Image (cartoon, rainbow, N blue to C red):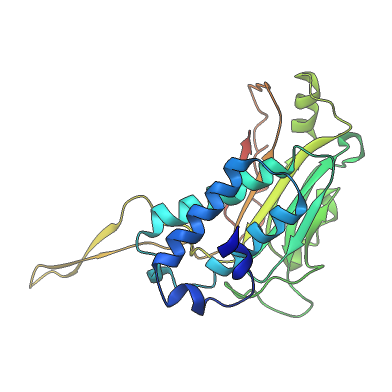
Length: 249
């Protein structure tokens, strides 16, 4: 954990000075995840390290798809470790927000939702810093002010009911929400080839980027299989700007 603890402040210069430090940091994160430690004292530095990586320019990563994917997997892996204990964890940093809680499904309204809200009278700025209080959990998705919502994802109560039917204890369902403020850690698996100058047959290869915040929800259960999820249960697509995933682990 030395390199993680050494640079968990907002100092991306340390990583940019030597790209090998990026590989060392990601390898250190993976080692921490493999250790299986569930405490907040381990989880918080991991989240802060991911936040720092997201300060980097996407071109700094030597292989963005691989390194970025490893970093995301490490974050999700450490949050999965944390969810094995009885506590809750929530933090909102400039580039990433994480909420890992044990939810009593009986207290959920139409859905359990996580949203990033715009401050009053402000417009969305992709890559702008998240703010504590504006990036938060809603026990009833219907309470989200849609006119101020930049990004959101929801777990409908119907899905939680299905978990109960599959034998999951509904008084403490481990649910994790993660939101990323930019796409530095995300890269399409294949580049897009475009022909810029037809006359000279000059073809340039460009990589598409995600022009939105990226958000995910993870429900952590053991030996649970759910089939025939109700239509529309993965994400509320009425909100215009978002990219989301929804996983069972």
